[in-house]
Structure formats: structure tokens, C-alpha cells
Length: 114
Image (cartoon, rainbow, N blue to C red; front, side, top):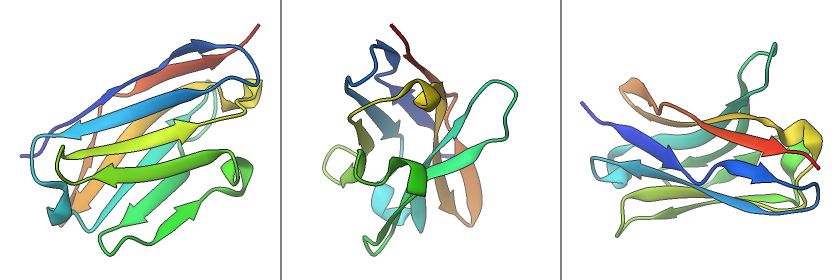
């Protein structure tokens, strides 16, 4: 049973940057896809960015040009570099991985506010 643990959330001012990390207890190359989702208060969970096993990457339109997803195979981590943050990016961010079954992290809070 794989476990995913997020880190790196926090409070940041509009225009600032944060880097989220997702540490996996198993080799990440075994996952067919890994992704970051987010859920704002009162909203449905939405896909932010994904990276397939072969390396193809997709982003939600709302974060294109501002966020960057990456993997570090040696460290078994997936990262999300978030720049030019906006108040509407405020949400709980979840790490997701799929390998026949889906795995979720516990989430990390990101708050963008003055």
C-alpha cells in the first residue's frame, strides 16, 4: 500500500511563490500517472497538473504559465512549483498517484492572502 505525503504549503502574499512536494513510499516510476489536485472551500476537487509515466504533462488552464510539475525519480518525489500566486489559488492541495488503484495524500493548505 503506497503512501503519499505532501509538504510545502503555507501562507503567501499574492504574486509570491511556493513549492509543494509529494513524497512516495514506493518507487514513483511504478505509477502510471501522478497529479496535483486542489479543493477550495465549498468547491469540488479539481485537477491542477498531471504527469504521466512516460513524462507527458498537462495543466489546468487556470495555472498554465504559472505552475510547473516535475518528478525526481531518485528521491521518489513529485513537486509543484507555484509562481505568481493569486488569491483564487487558495485551496487544500492533494497529491494523487495511480497504479491500478488510486492513492491520495492527506493534503496541504495553501493560502494566498495579504
